[in-house]
Length: 508
DNA sequence: TTCCGACAGTGGGGTCGCAAT
DNA sequence: ATTGCGACCCCACTATCGGAA
Image 1 (cartoon, rainbow, N blue to C red):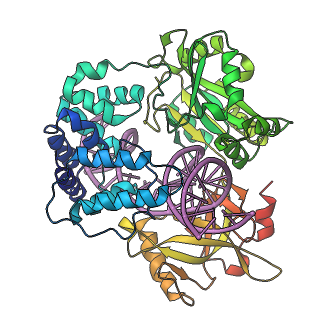
Image 2: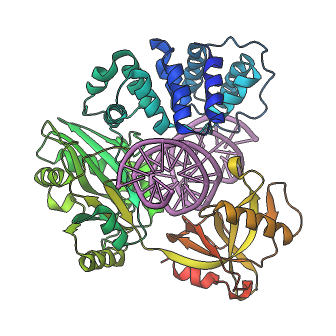
Image 3: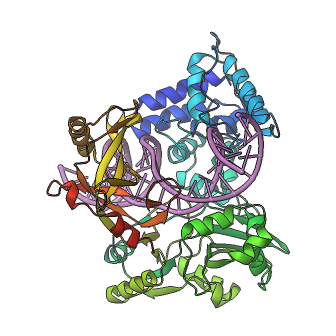
């Protein structure tokens, strides 16, 4: 199949706003792609590469060369070249990769260049990713989307699932099994604003688990072989020897467990997330690092114990199996209750201990990937500050022509100046975007670099955030984590905004 | 007819590894 | 030694579609 065929379908999908229309376009193409190119087509049309990452980003993609006039490149051609690009390493590799990217772009038309540019930079923006592609695969292979979804949970990679469905139908989908050593797509949690809303969503009794601010780990053991995977299914086994040893010490030799690793201080309180993340992502000097910053692991789910697959069991039963396989000190602390006061005091307790919050889980839900909000719901405490808007950046895509990303500052009472603490674009409605664009242009102050518009520091905005972290980037040495806009405060002047001292007191 | 779950899009800060400077 | 880039860890929120109620 030619690349241009895929490009044309992608453009049709982008032009179609109705989801069923997008699915129709995608399914039509899937029904005519050859078995040898199905994985490539599915990957491209859900915005990813079969090679996953190839070491090419926005910088390497600047200044594309002159295009061809006639489209002749096949999917196989493009895929082979991307595989070669990924394989490059060592000195001179950046130049070599850039040259090969030019080779690729020289071999395609401008229409194809535009598609590849967006695909390689991870911004396809055609309004269809995995969720829509799942439906398209189901339609093209005459299977139920639930079967596709379940196969994706077990296999972890949609193009492989789709290719199997297109050639083997429902039977091929049902043949996917949990395989020890190959990661499954992790189950994710939705969120709720408070404990009462969480209990209401779950409806009745729920298991409340501590939400630890660490790194998600899926751990597989087969005999003496242990593999550890992250949320995006990357293998980090070599970076977490403590976890490997802990799992090897368990009596069961056939396990798949879900949990969290976190660096704790000697007193048991959690280290800042930055410390855990740094430890987990460091590949060199691990023996020394584990002396300085040991990792603890807490498991909260069991997908397989002693040869039995547990994904379809209700959460409550999986918990019982987990408790037989893992000693209590490796289990995530939890409370099962339907009582609001009890749940709220449990929440207060976990926050007092310095942890992130709670995850509430339905006792009856099976383990299912990618369905945020169904069986698992998280809740965290919320902080707010009144900050001053110092500047704003022009938005992209559907925010084109709107001032979107806000630069936020706190007041320094000594100098009267404002200290930048980070940016946010979250929480804005279309109405608010339109309003603030107009308002910002009225108070624009001084030159802009074409991207950022500096503002007179007059507008006060109420910002919610999860915490204050140390920052090497901002002048105050601190930044807000997960800042989002709640509302503007027209009743407040810049002199009424919160101060850097207030922010600093929250960093502990 | 209204409500709500699922999805895609729009980006945030921090850190590491590697290559280039 | 420092800087730039790519990748990935954590993530919140809104708009929209379309099926459920």
